Image (cartoon, rainbow, N blue to C red):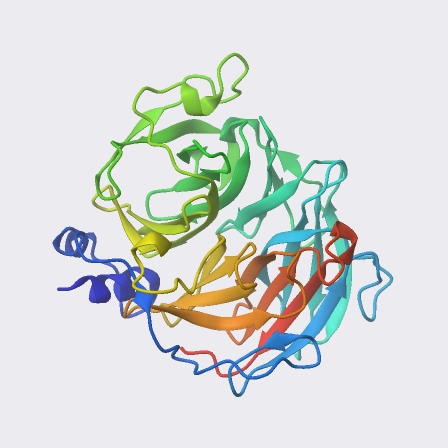
Length: 384
C-alpha cells in the first residue's frame, strides 16, 4: 500500500474507509508535488475577478458593510473562517469576523435552490475571530486569534446565544476540527512556536467541561507522537504552550480538518500541510513548499477543507491569492485564483452539505481594508 492510497482513504468518506494500520507503511513517502489539476487549467478572470477551470462559475454572496442580497442584514468586516450546515431543505454558511474589537460571526441561510433566505448575527462582542470548526451536533466553534483568546460555541440556526467554552483553553486560537471517532477536538495555535492541542469533552456533545492536551514529539517532521495534559488551560500564570516539556512546536498553526482517522492541519510560517494519523498516533507531511521540485504552487498556506472526492482544498494568505487542490494522488495544483486583490487573503473555504457549491471569502477584497471583504460562491462539476 503506497502513500497515495493512504491519502485517498484518509480524506475520502464512504467506501474508502480509513485503516490506520496502512499509514505506517507509507510514512516515509514524499509530500505532494506539483502536477496537472484534475479540473484543468484556469481560464481568464470572470466578471468577479475569479479565474476558474472550465465549467465553473462564481457569484458574490456578500460584501462587508453592505446588506446581503434580499435581506436587511449588513455583512461584517474581514470575513474569515467559515463552514456550512444543513438547514431543512437548504443550508447555512457561517463566517467569522477577524476584527478587534467587535469580531463575532454571521450566517447566511440559503433556500434549496440556492437563493438567499436570510442573514443574521450569531456572535457579537468578541475579538479577532479568525477560524474555527463545525461540530457533529451542528454548532460552530468560533476561535479568537488573540493572546489567551477563547473558543465560543455558536448556533448557526439562530435564536440561541453563543457560549464561551473556557475548558477548551486560552491561547491564540486558530482552527478546530472534531474527531467523532475518538471524541476529541483538535485545535491549532497561531504562534511561531505554537502547538497542536486536543480537547477531550467530559461528555461528547457538551463542551462545558473536559481535558485539554498538547501534542508531544521531537523535532522530526514524521514519526510517533503522544499527548500530555495541559495543567492550566487558562494560561493564567504560564502560557499553555509552555506548560508541558517536549510539546512539539509548529510554525504558525492555521487551518484544521478531520476526515476518516486523519486530522489535516496547516502551518503558514513554513508553508506545510501536516497529517496526524489519529489511529496510530503519528504525524507526517502531506505538503511542504520547501520540498517541491521547482516553483511551489501553494504558499501562504492557511485555511483547509476537504471534499467528498478525497481532495483537500487549501486557501492562501498571500501567495498568488489561490485556492489549491491536493489530490489523493499527491498532486497539488491551483483550483482558482482571485485577481486584483493582492493585499488580501483567502479565508473560509467550505462546501455545501451536498458538495455542489463552494464558499470562501477574500478578507480585504480590492480595497486592502477589512471593510472591503467579499464572500463568494462557486458552482461547477466538482469531483465526487
